[in-house]
Each structure stands twice: as C-alpha cells, then as structure tokens.
Length: 330
Image (cartoon, rainbow, N blue to C red; front, top):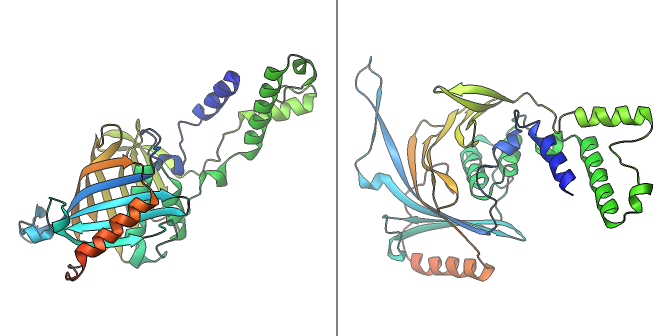
C-alpha cells in the first residue's frame, strides 16, 4: 500500500505546477473540515467614494453614519439533504437577540439555487466563494460560474480516466499480493505487462498528466508577488502561489464589473485560515468592506437548526423589515 501512496503522490506532484481551477478554489491550505456546521460573524460597511476635483483621483473613505454599517451572522449546516444556510442581521456589534432585525433561510443552497442571470450573479458568486472557503469545496463555485456561461470545467470532466483506472488496477494488485504470498507468483503487475506493446501503452499513460490542461491557469505576478491566475472568458481570479489563498476575483458583465478582494488571511478559529477583510465593488459600482470577526466550526443537529429558526421568528414577530441588504447577501 505504501507503494501506491508514493506512486499517487509522484503522479499528482508532477502536476502541482499547474493546479486545476477546482483545486485552487478548494482552499487547500486549510485542514479538512470534519464539522457539519460553520458560523461566520461579520460587519458590512458601505463605502463612500468622493471625487475631490475633476482632475484628482478618487478619495475612498468609510461613511461615518453608523447606519451605513450592518452586522451579520451566516450559518452553514451540511445535512444529508444538502447545505442549509441561514443569515441573521443585527443592528449593532453585540450580535445579541435584542439586536436581531432580520433573518433569511435557504433550506438547500447549491450551485443552482441562484439563477444564472446578472441580477442574481452577485449572490451566486459570493456564496459560492464562502462555501469554497468554509468547507474546502471548489465544485460549488465552479458549477455556478459554468451556469453563467464561463467556460470552466470540474476536475471530473478533465481527469485522465485511463490513468485513474490503471492506478486503481495497481492498487488492487498490491492488496492481493499483500494478502497472499502465492498471489505474487500468479498475479500480473498491471504497471509491468509482459507484452511489449502493452508495456509501451502503460508507459505512455503514466507519462500523461492526471488532468487535461485547459490553459486557464498560469503563473503570473501580482503586486510583485508570484501568483496563480485563472482567466476564463469574462472571469479572472488570483491565488497566492504557495498557500493558494484566494486574493481577487473579477467578473465582467454587461451590467458592469464585479470585483472582490480578500485581504489579511488569519487563523480565524485558531486552525483555519480565512480573510479578515473582504472588499467588494458591486456591478452597480457601490463598494463595501466586510470585516470577518469570527469563524466557528461545530457539530449541529437538525433540531438545533430548527430551534434557532423558531427562536428568530419569535424575536422578529411584529418588527419592521429593515432597509435593503447589499446585493451579494441573501
């Protein structure tokens, strides 16, 4: 079995210089997430853009009006039925029940929850990216971007199936000969066939890449640093070279450009990296600063989720609906 692990490692390492789009969005620097519940705590500030004069550059400053800052908690719960997402809005940073002013609940949020239209794209992309980072899941965001017409592919669409099948045969071979010494004499090593033509075919397969190169990922430089850059039609993304942290995305549409920057990655819960700040420019040109103040992983039961939603309904009974939310939130 150790030989299989070494072989697989070498096979994948040979492709490490050109990671796939899905693997980049997997946020692989973080450890695997074993919990089914995640809570993000964040403040959202609307940014005022002022022009000093007709020939001066724009001066960006945060609005002082405290009504321009909202406070949110987003709860992700993975269940057998799918990903359940609830969003709570608060009027101040206490995040107390008394400050709760609104809630939204999606019982099954997936890559096809939001329509593949410009009006829904900001939510679809933003929550696809959150899912990518909190659960190390690159498939959700890739699938949503595909629905927008961006020519991306999932790993299972570009994987070298002949190579996978050959490695699987070799793994079965090792398991068999480890169980029985006699099998070593009778079983044929699939990586070393006796027939010359078959051996050449195996060598050719093992020499091929594990994934087809889509030419959408390349090494580049951003602000003097080496980065991985994804370019696919109207979509661009930049990841740090070493840890593959997502730094920026840009989606160009007929309604404008949607820009998101992820800054100051930190161990938000002591073990998992997450950006402390997220800067967003919406399709309309409005700018926001998100400050992530908390990230928590935990095990959540279905009854815990239902109890929380019921409690919110009781607290919000009779309260006025708050002002509109930023376009990228639920």
